[in-house]
Image 1 (cartoon, rainbow, N blue to C red):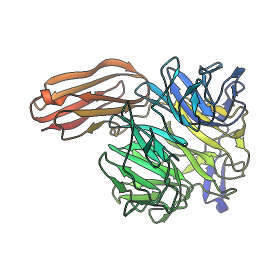
Image 2: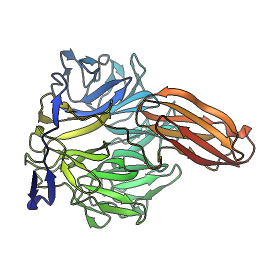
Image 3: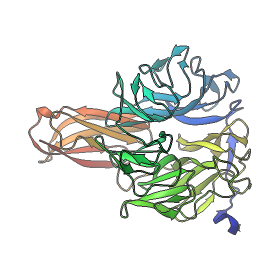
Image 4: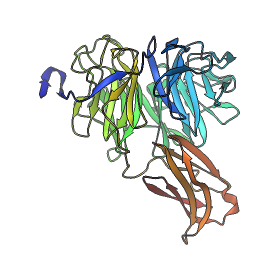
Length: 445
């Protein structure tokens, strides 16, 4: 059955073969972040219990039951990221497991560990880039160093990333995404130094630059779908086009273009828009707060051509909705402030995903390139897989195996190649997983 709402500028295709179901009794309050680690689904948010367990702001689901993670945090968790097999959490907390950990911490497998003296305000997103951990948020200091909105951790200390935001906006960073060997950030800013950079910018490891004409308001999230970069938020124009809450970056135009008619329909509050994006089963799912109409349910999906309803049997309190979407064990999970199904976190029942095989792999990064003494090799895998990472010379001879058929969990990985020991010239780095292989050229000088 096809229902068309002309006033919504959106066509909704309805199918009742899929539905969202609760994970046990869920949590007692909202879920802001979802992640995965060691086969479990992790949830962070504003809750103090999960299932029958007392769980302060963070908990994990093993497929059948919820459990606490130590004694948890003392305030909200806004992001959870698995990087190189290590789980990181960011938010508004100042203690983790009873130990001082200001707004960011990492899980050792048995306890939470602080990362220096942390930040002075909220951390909203975490990512790995060129072998270092980046955090974005509303903070102004990191590790006691002035760092407005974004900072990086080298394993022992925090440092600023030299981003002079304008005073016209808050300079908050709410989204981080690595795309084609560059770090993209989204948030509430419109200028970097003397350059106009409206709500989105990118960092190549040395300098910041704008990304097209940008948007006219806040970018809340970013994701890749079919190897293209998408951004969601509270904007209604992007790249000079009408783009309701979502846009795609066109590498030919070097600017943002609309994604269908977008999703910001019948706005019901000052923070309506898209909060989360996730690619699943060759479709892009978008979650947020769109409308009071039951036909939208605050989660929809894009198949590359048109939008359709992605949330049968899900509904929310007006002005709230879906805060996080993640693929875990080939199934789609959502967390937020929705009221149906109960428990604030749910699974899309009856749908098993298939591994997405990229046409080319944007997740293999070599930096610096050209290199001399050392080159950092970073890569991302989307599912548990045996992985090999090898380096070949220009004659096709393998000179080193950096990862040898090792089983790795989904996440971002990074390894240094000590390149000074090899002759100058052209080399090839090969990433091999169970589903695909990717080769990138490395120049040693």
